[in-house]
Length: 296
Image (cartoon, rainbow, N blue to C red; front, side, top):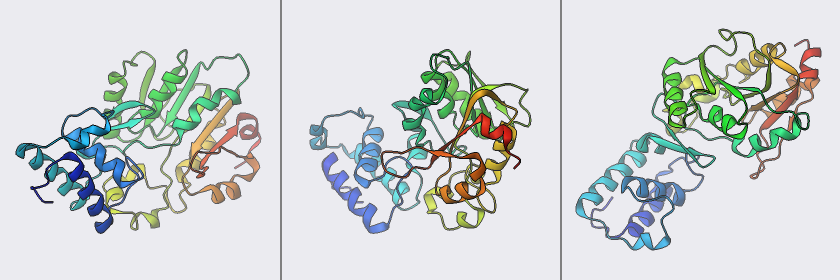
């Protein structure tokens, strides 16, 4: 990108054009080129993310131009995901550390977690919750923030991702309430009864991984690969959840494009689908009572 571009606004406009021309894949930090490119500019220049529009008139020094040019070169030419360039991601207004060891946090649970009280007995506090396949630990942290009286378990199979989750638990000063477990679903977790079991598990069918945009291929395959039909981890989680829930408990899963498959395979569990702001509606809920009767 031309080093002669003078202001932050000039760089933003050029980045948007290059994103479109080069077919840069979005969705890991923002769903549009303007917001992602502006985010990268502000973070690269150490400017506040809530900067006023007048920041676009800010002239860049030669050193700043060189830094910005290198960030956009890596983003557009090398297809490095934006969160890996900045070492962070934001979810629910909270900052999380991220790197190549974890999938970049993005989840409809930001909308759903505040609604979960409505699906539990009125007036009964959430005492224990768990985030299965926690990755960076972001959803475990959001659960702990939403339910301040709850103990939260954060389960992760990958030792590399688990180390990042531990960093984020410490970052948000939740070490006393959020406990990390390295486990394949509940295999290595001591028996416990949960009010809420939550998971954004791997759900991409294996055959579809090769067709993902390059940016998404850079994320850990373990966090994406859901097996032949995308349901491998989900099946295991639901089977194990039968003995892990309080009688009033719920399981809540984010499953991407698997809604039709979920409705077919788990029809006996009567999944409830939440409506999300963008209409994707890819988060479903299961009740303990239905799981106990299930013979899947």
